[in-house]
Image (cartoon, rainbow, N blue to C red; front, side):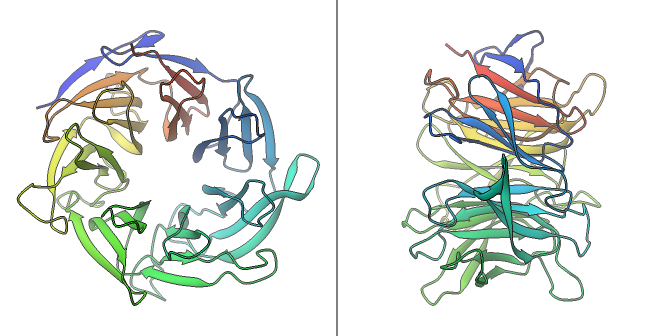
Length: 389
């Protein structure tokens, strides 16, 4: 059962209350957002990969700083991942660009650093070309001294391999000059939209959850260096032409067990969670629950505790309007059933942001997680301040 509550005005929510603040920055397409301390003042700033630039907004004035300008990379910039790549103690970014939006030969991976930059703009160093690169993250999946850059294209290249080349790139001793060694994780899934590095099994090793046309899979590195793939979520296999799942995050229920959250099918209209049957092993198909089927182009998923209770809320960004009454924007889902089968839905500020991506963290040190949403058609950045009591 799904219970839904709709709210308008400046303060939103029933049990969960949020106050919206529109920032002045104007975006082309806010493809990705992260909350990071960019200037060492112990405050989280808003970092955004925009269509033709990379920028950050300084907390608390939200002054805009552009670190990659139009023309420094091939448009579109689509994803980024933070890490001190060259070991100088300063934050760098890996950056995926040349996004073609389809099965094209485009797709560049580079890293950017303040060292050697000109003025406010950072220096850009190429890593490799990987067609249709769509999502990147740093994670130590090899268990060595440094994290690797995990790269997930959207499509496989039909003339070269059967599926998406999910790969890990090692950071070399000299990342500016040396080639980044490539480790293949999987190439069997034809269309992938996102992935999540996480110690899912609790053995101290980072695994990967992937969301693809085939559903949700757990990828585990074996002792011999090979990777084992196990399906945990079926995905929506009835819809056409798109199917499966397109986002993946993991949340916690009140009893401490996990739930897996997705959007289904690929770029789909359903919010779905999976929970493990207590009578079945971890490596089995999990139970599937559809929480909401009244959205269009769900495009961002996050799980975190918004109200200091025993479980994690599910945060969903919707990119497009389904109808005049079913709008794009932010939706919150609060678990109300111990087994994860029922969540209470709260719609936040409908229509205000065509959410391409979102990020969640405490921006004002009040102990509550706030939400930052970046738009596509709305070209905007909005903070939702957590006012939950």
